[in-house]
Length: 249
Length: 278
Image 1 (cartoon, each protein chain N blue to C red):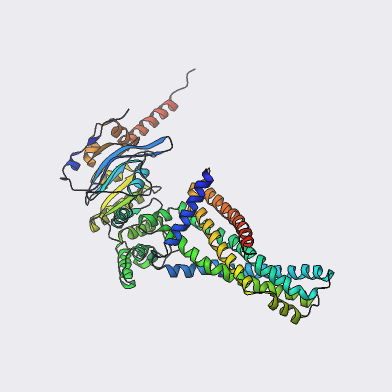
Image 2: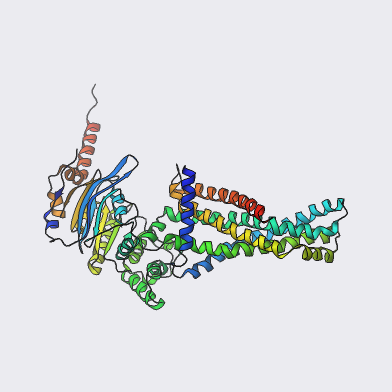
């Protein structure tokens, strides 16, 4: 029963935050700041993880395809794996680990130090001021970071396939170009947007309600809220990935 | 055992000129009743202090009045109108006319002093940037913080943070300011300074102040009206002089607590000095 109530409360919180778009003043300055926080600060981790994912896909893919004499299809394997599954999921998990956990901790501390209550007493919508800009930023940052993840992943795949294992670069890039269709890109972007909204709202919700964590107060409540935010967001990404894939495949 | 409400002549003499009136306010957390029917009336333009020992329910009372906590029962009227906090318009109107100063100041540590003060104007008014800047700087200068506009709250001293929080509270020109334990954790000299600051700016700006505290001495010197909250009920309400001379048993025990401590310590010392029985 508590879980159902919690889900309903979470849905209301997200709806309230999204509907505050119209009522929040000077919103876009805060959206720009949130884009910087979520986007630029997560750039190194996206670049590093994207590159290594591409390198591993190139390596594994080459040896699997080599068994069937189909090394020329390495570009297809790397690109479709990245675009349809790995980039949206891994980019979202990286963003949860970096931006989502920071958001949950920040809101938890703001709850503890009564900054959220202060906003409410000033007649400022705390959801509108603190959560709405982060949700809007996620709509832009998650697809952008996913696209970047795909780009560096493809480059990583070509690095291991062409430079290390001898696949012709022209063949690799031509097969990438042939394999990826607009439907794949649409699926990739749809997943990125969904994961962005889902994870940022979960992280914001957990931090925002850190004072309601049972059996914990103060710093311990912030720590518990942050952990819960990361765990639930990661599960939500994988569950939503399965649901979206099963509908679109 | 509950004691009857004792009301001083100060309240009765206002001729109904009350800005905030509270009637039979109740709040429980689970089985624990914190407020058991609080009634009080705060005169307009005055400094009203609610005294009480720790755990008496002072902060909960203030949070119910400021709509941070939702009361279980009771009635709150502001400027003669009954407040319904479930009604967005009623809530917004009340919040536009009141400010709240938190025990820990609740300043935004990622914003400069200027941005902290400008925030309520930016978010709740349609004033232009120039006017917001002018009003925020004016509030900072009135609180002698003009030179610290670009400083972050974390780099300011405790007293300056308190003044910054007050600057943010008064920048919207509220009719009423709620102060939650404004001197908590401060040494006696700073306690005096904070009460002097509140009294000074309350006189200067003319807002009605409602303070909850357990600092008897400072409250009695600075306040126009004092109420004593005991076990979730107001057991005394009157002028500081009436409080000082009240024969009410709870008032006496609260007022005479330093003397009682001295007597206990004297007894202990006498016991320690006495020769041990052989």
